[in-house]
Length: 336
Ligand SMILES: NC(=O)c1ccc[n+]([C@@H]2O[C@H](COP(=O)([O-])OP(=O)(O)OC[C@H]3O[C@@H](n4cnc5c(N)ncnc54)[C@H](O)[C@@H]3O)[C@@H](O)[C@H]2O)c1
Image: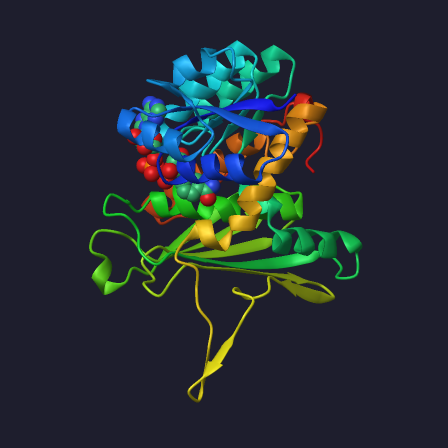
């Protein structure tokens, strides 16, 4: 029997996930869609498998045809919807962030522990990207010795007009925060954020240069620049005591024509990480069917939001800021 999936939010990410579930995800059937904008939900319903259109997310969660829920509505809606999925005992893949506040994430963690089951996965899709997976395997091989530094670049072509300075961290750099925790099997203990705003960026502090220190003493720097204009560009290099591991440049082809060699950039994250989004959904469906949780947990969602919150505090205060996480509950096992 296929897993019946309902998607909440029919915007950029929700419609993309709905197409992936319809066209590429074996073992799942997209049965329902919901959006506060009924026309948007109906439009996705006509181009995908989702034939049941609900007026709101809570109605979709209660639908008996829906066995599992993918949340792709705005960040501010995540906590209420994830808690409703937990009350209904249904697995949920929630787009990042798990919730915008640390307290909200902790309420979800407590509710999940109370169910006694791992039902929540957070949409940190870089954990399913072949480049980051190869980087992690290289580090685990032992050939490179211990990690010392990680350099990260996260550039977007253009940010929406409502983007504020904190969102460079909570919306963009949060991906580097999660993937660095996962690669290093480590948490961060302090952060400094340097402001190096472009003259054209107005009130927006863009770009920012974030320096995190981990418990084991690894320094991770993140350049986050959301109006870099030329395209979407994500890079990472791990510097270890006996070598370095660098993500291969994207895209895979270089063009030679008219006396010039060129290569293009993806317009945004959907093109750059397209394969990772597909693998994430396949893996989520497989984990529901097997009952073995995989991917970023609710605890990872909490740690990412708490770390991002400390980064935003460091940005505002211009001081090095301590990052204090709650003790990791045994329910989530060791970091993996
Ligand atoms: N993993 C990633 O790489 C990635 C990338 C971009 C966005 N995101 C996250 O995905 C989520 C959606 O982002 P987006 O870019 O698709 O936004 P969007 O604005 O394009 O789409 C959001 C949709 O949700 C609908 N909506 C609003 N309130 C709702 C509610 N209460 N119930 C149901 N639908 C509601 C809106 O009408 C809209 O159609 C956000 O949490 C965002 O942070 C993740």
